[in-house]
Length: 134
Ligand code: ADP
Image (tube, rainbow, N blue to C red; front, side, top):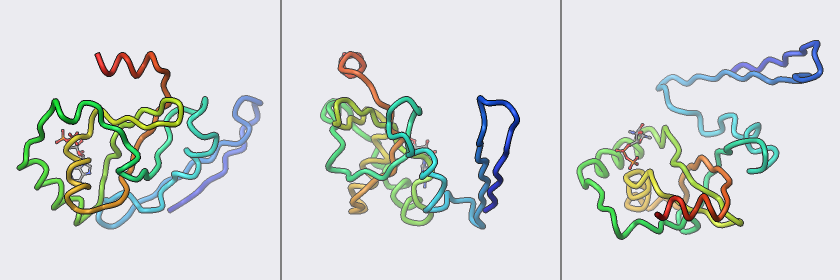
């Protein structure tokens, strides 16, 4: 893990922290660079990566879609071994979290009995939510 602080002369990018990390098995380190993404919350700063409890993620379309059990099993094996490598996408509207994709990863976590799942959270409006539910 290496961290560099770049001091640029112009005022737009006064302090830019560039981080690079690696691990021997290619997995995402458990304490990656999330803190820098989290700062500023889910406001203007774009998506944030956070571990959310599974039971805090509403999945309105869950009953209308069925997962491939073989895919879920493969993901369970892989996640148990190397952890979740790609977070699931989650929409935050008025403090509530909604998941519409990442269904196999979500089910794999449920079946593994994991309490939380790593999420890429974007903030949206009620209109965004309605659009997803159409
Ligand atoms: P989902 O419904 O969860 O999106 P897919 O089978 O369509 O299921 O995709 C699985 C996704 O899970 C892929 O994008 C893959 O990169 C990601 N992934 C994250 N962690 C792992 C892991 N440990 N092993 C395998 N795939 C993983």
